[in-house]
Image (cartoon, rainbow, N blue to C red; front, side):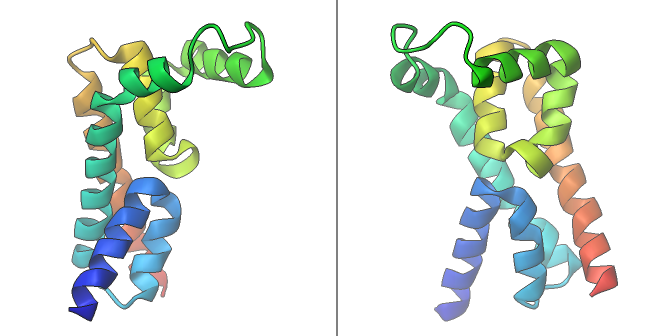
Length: 139
């Protein structure tokens, strides 16, 4: 039972902050394949959850009435969106932004695109595989 809770906790950590979950899974004693399974499961669950509820979250918690038009955060988000587009956001989401923020941005700006989900799933799996083998190799 203790092992199940450890895996569930690591999956939840992967969904919240993917980049920090990878070393945590390796330090918990899991091998490369288990690390890939745990981190990609958490990352994908989090992505789908926040992607499909992203528009609702954006509309509910970030209403247009409460926002400044030109805050530093809004400028940064628009700058990233315009400079890097869907691919850029998908690439940096697992490693820098965090999956919940990246999924909400994807839903808000690219939610109607058919390729959005495929691109994000690819990059979540890519980062999970690369970092899992890299961390297991060097530890």
